[in-house]
Length: 361
Image (cartoon, rainbow, N blue to C red; front, side, top):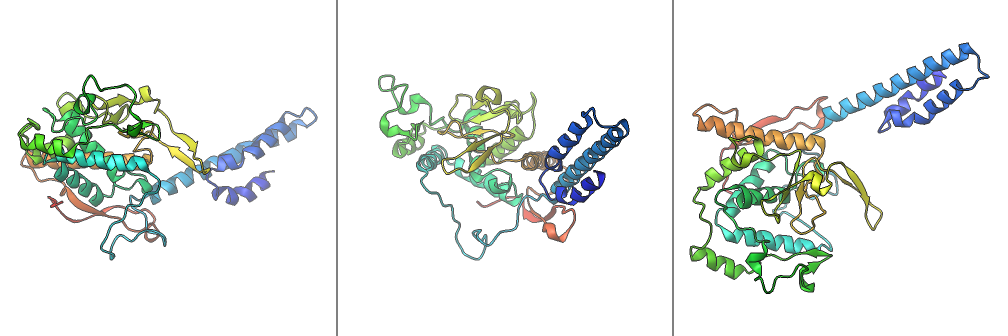
């Protein structure tokens, strides 16, 4: 019996979970232990064998976890079907049969028209996330769209006074007489309410006439406060800081924050699509889509990913704080992380490449 466990150990190490792989075997051994016809000596021997098998299983799982931790990198090597990152002169973002994405794009465009600081701030944060390699939903961090929503949440709900209005607030695109609880058919897409103030000419006219934001903070101050908000918590932090473990960013909600408990986003779930694909929904970081309210934009963020993202916000805040105190910072905000391929080293460690403190967008 013990020999059998030894023989299949190699097989177990190749499985995602050795404990799961040997569950049936252990159950069989335990069933033998309960057989009254077996001798006491055999029972003692079987008990020892079960204990040994369990030890092997847990050892295999622990080793596998250590290997996964050591081999995790923020950016993976491109495969043969991946769009090249350099040498082609263009960037591509391809979507099929996604009508909601058209409304999301228009919403972001309208927000960019509400204040001239919106677009450069979004570009700065996206460029920073790219340099620090925490902007890939495919590899377990956050998509660029997620960072845009983080910026907009800050400008709409955290900055005082607000830099941008909430374009989904009913009073901006409707009067008391025309407002209805349920949207008209042309504003209902795949069952979701896509109403918002989308009159670009009216938004631009309002801003040009001086009717825009009363917030006079320069872009640098807004960026400093943005990193402070997501890096720390407490009474001395603007907006008291974002609570990553409990809060859901909700751009359409007054105040901009809902609780994970309220939305039921408290544990990972799996769903099956119409074409039988399994989709894993994680809620380590939660950003509610402005229209598709049951969609977490940050659902692809893994444990390693959330650690990396939060570490980068803390690092950015440490650098900005040190500069503000006249001290030498630990690095530059736009230092680029250069990771060695996993195949080249047993335990790859990110290194810093020379970068720029500012970005031209």
